[in-house]
Length: 221
Image 1 (tube, rainbow, N blue to C red):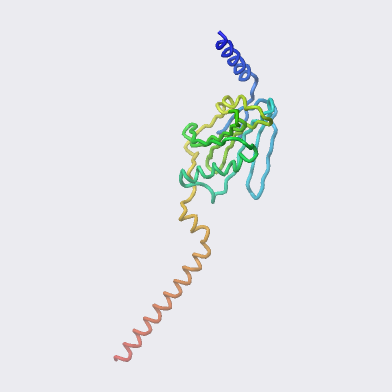
Image 2 (cartoon, helix red, strand yellow):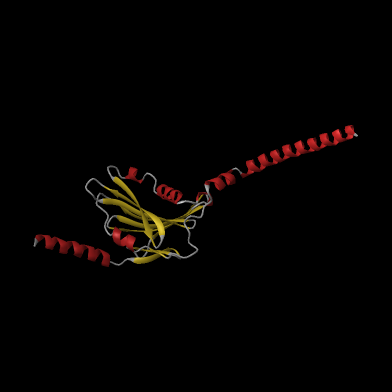
């Protein structure tokens, strides 16, 4: 009876939490999510030609946020390994902000898009940080749940379940050039100079060869 009692309490807490009003927000025309506030905090900035945009709200000392950031074309992935490497770099050294926590990462899939889920769990099993990250074309989308105190995150499952990604034909994840082409692009000026020098040397050799052959014909006559 006691076990059933606690199950009912747990269900009531979850139901109450999820029935509190959450509001729709849009990061992009194809990306929507919910926040527990009608008016979200807005951060919109551009640094070194990289645009960053964030909408966030706080509830019970937990910050929920949706972010998007433009990725440089030179950094776009051409393989799944490169894609996962970008995800790893999206939240660098997050565990340093939460000592004595365990970090876990796993690949996820939403409507055919490959993403990554990151979680930090403290010594007693409470999740203090969770995120999901997705790359769509040249935009990186990052959704966070961040605990501002020692208590665990609540409503994270609901928050992540409300992320809506509409996949269309024009949305791609592996759009970058291969390592070979990236190398050529990086050193294209040096490569053109080198090819020009090689062409000049070959031209001189051919001219000298033709001149010698012409001289030999004149002497033979």
